[in-house]
Image (cartoon, rainbow, N blue to C red):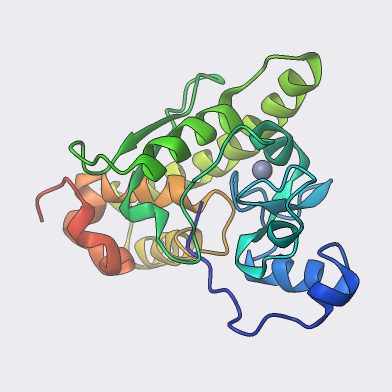
Amino acid sequence: MFKVIRPLEEPVELKTKGYNSEKIVNTLWEMCYRKCYLCETLNPDAPEIEHKEPHENKDEDLKVDWKNLFYSCRRCNSIKGVKHKNILDVAQVDPITKIIWNMAPSNYSDVTFEKVDKQCKDKAVEDTIKLLDRCFNETGTAFRGITREALIEKIEIKLQHFLKQAYKIRHEDSDEDDIEKARKQLKVMLQNRYPYSAFWRWRFLRDPVLMREHSDLLSEYAKLSPCKK
Ligand SMILES: [Zn+2]
């Protein structure tokens, strides 16, 4: 997940043409940097409009409530369904400041999530973690097994790219040019628009070498880092 900036003005088409109309879909697509707002897959094959608070086909106001609409992939939308309510509103709260994303490079093992503040009793944070755990890990049906494998494979490829840059930065044979190139690559990966950005931000924040020598790349989140600078 990642912070989004929702256009303040609600498109007039929402009330007249519905939430699946072209203008709404395109606006939400851009607002979410063309990614599923839950799993962060870029340009998912089967995109849908996701209602943060489920309308359950009976609440007409929620159906066309501009602040309730996000862009998502079919897997995340169907997992969320009507069960998961009260999750973090990423147009209001930066989820990086509330939840730690963690993926170990280890053969499709579960992705894990933790609260940034262990004492935090915010139910929205706890409910969001429950949903994320299912979005990234659930394999309950044959289709969910297949979509989960495809999702983890995409993240693993990006993880290898991240690790390669982190390695270049700390390797004794790297010269200034190598380090500068690696810094540029990491800078791109740490942006909101990059796929699975929450994982790279948290990996960066928990890397003592990167935080000691290159914390300028993620200065807005530096205070969240457990590493001493
Ligand atoms: Zn998704």
